[in-house]
Amino acid sequence: MHGAAFEALGIDGEWSYGAIELAPEEFGRRVPELEADGYVGANVTVPHKRAALAISDDASEVARAIGASNTLSFREGRIHGENTDAAGLLASLPEPPGGKRALVLGAGGAARAVVWGLKNGDAEVEIWNRTAERAEELALHFGARAVTAGECEVGAYDIVVNATSVGMDRSTTTDGGGAGLKPLPIAADGLRANQVVVDLVYASGETELARAARERGATVVGGLEVLVHQGAESFRIWTGLDPPLEAMREAAKST
Ligand code: ATR
Image (tube, protein in one colour):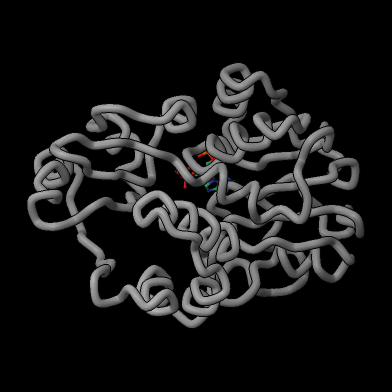
């Protein structure tokens, strides 16, 4: 995605993007060395996002509020921590969430960024999680409301975001009959048009939630779209350039 963006802007001679795999115990030692290796920054993913914030010399308000960083910049021996996950989500929505009622499924790291983003965008946010205490903690932290499965009437929400890992395991989610939704408090026939359904899971092909939502006329935002937008925001931070979204989207789709 980033390689395609560099090419689209004709800066692929000066810029490159590559993957470095690190064990958690190497993270704190290796990342501060990257600037000397020529890196201007890094995207950080699971399970390192909290550690990325912890090693940052300074961090944005968003990264501190979410408690995690997915985008680091290296500047003269200092590490700056940002978080573009919430911005990526907001940029993926067809319209700003202000005044809308949103249901967030999940209470892990991904859900944290989503809840912060939606709350910051002035949505009314409710959180369901398999482990109810985690939903309650997250709700308390961000001024949202935790709900039980019995309280979730899915058709009542303007925005539904799946921030759980349900749907990642394709083998259990592709029967098309709604069985893959069972771990979630959502019945396929409760979904409706005029809803925005975001599934952060980026699997190849459509998740069962996305399909059920699409079949009922909802606006579906896939995890790949959110990924592209968070990547685009990271790109802007490192290069100072407007990200070429279409090139990034096409590249993300083709991998
Ligand atoms: P991430 O950082 O990607 O959000 P995580 O912190 O491990 O990852 O969170 C995974 C989320 O998916 C959690 O909300 C988890 O629910 P629990 O808090 O109850 O563990 C949710 N999840 C994972 N598998 C699930 C399943 N089979 N059914 C329902 N929720 C599930």
